Image 1 (tube, each protein chain N blue to C red):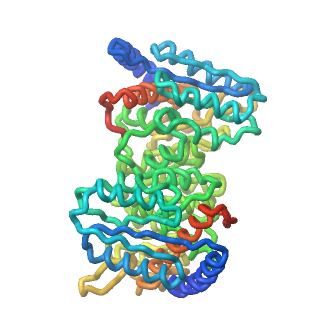
Image 2 (image 1 turned 120 degrees about the horizontal axis):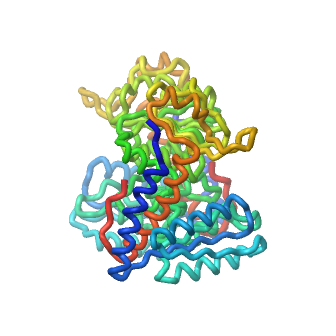
Image 3 (image 1 turned 90 degrees about the vertical axis):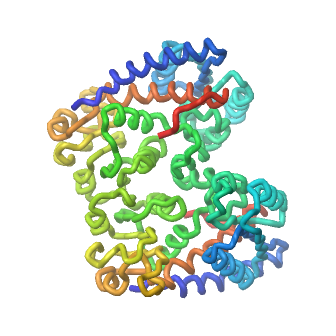
Length: 289
Length: 289
């Protein structure tokens, strides 16, 4: 089974577009601000894609572009301006930032109620405590949970193995799976005999940035394989962290690259913008899972 | 090897007592407030032990005892009083609270800079993001890290398996081990074939509250076994979650119950009270591990 993130995200977009129209009709217009500092080419593309998606769904989108010499103090001031602006529901600072700016400080400067990326310590703490309140979650792992749910893959009682323990993907991914009742193993660069771990996974999440790190022989037959990688192979072709062509014959379900996890990330960002708008406006919300 | 938490905590107490005396000589007197609501017998003992230990080390200790019908509003007011009191460095509300009080709300009411238990979402988030700032951590898992370090057991590259994923022990324990470079597996009540997981552990942490859940056959020969349990067996005897008498012949290192993890928890609480006092007074601090 191919887990088609592109098709699912298109389907979710249709629902979101309708929901945004409804919200606007009742006086609530979800609004997202994306701040980008400098000219990192990949970041430019991501920001452009977010803007395009927001516009398509009827979400108000502001892109604040600043030169690479924009200071930390100026950035803090810009964030504060949007923190104070009640018409704005989500604030996202595109990472990475230039080296002269402290990313942790910037993330903590964003009002926790507008932290649409779910990167603030408070949101992360709620996630890891499986809090029953609403909190935003890092978009890539949350999008993966949406995809698993859509394909009726229930992590409860399953063994999930995470390869790569970044704060943006691996760690929150493990917390979401743990909260959903999975047994969770975190593996990473220091893990010895990685294959011995990945071969025990019912659900294998790979987020390392190493092209084709995971081969067919590293996968338990029938496992669900989620590939977060967006790498370039020796010919410059976009590939994942999983050797898809061979892995697909072993896995029970697998995400392609591109068209798997990627589209779900942006769609989740839009979902969370709408959620934050509804929370800010005291509207009813589905419980977090 | 027996990991003697009692002996280690006594040794650390000697150092702390000297440090507290030094701090007092320079005008800084660490002060801890413990609030207990109701008459839970186990909680009474814990609070008494904390008070006695603080006094022994020269740490100022205030116990606020309230009847079981103390309201949530009254408790919030009491916390606020100590939040505003600059002479107080740590505030601990003994759990569990009576059912009419929302524990999450109470924990979040404690000033994050006085959250000596490390239970606030912000502290938990910093832990799970492996933040480089200072933050308090739940005392039991932090005490276990101190014990591992003392006995030169380095988690880096080791496979640590956690049995029990509570917010107070299992989850922060896994985060500390992950931050120290271990491969970490979280197992819990929904885990299938628990023994298959525990048998792969180089470091096995058991915190379930089930007497003698883990037998010798569940342990990899030579593994480090940390038993957080404080259970009663059928004869009313205090035992751990691990069948110590048989497990000790398989394990490479093991904590006894009592005299293992327990004493380290209280000692860690005192360490964190001192740390919070030093942070509040802008004094130099050892980096967090």
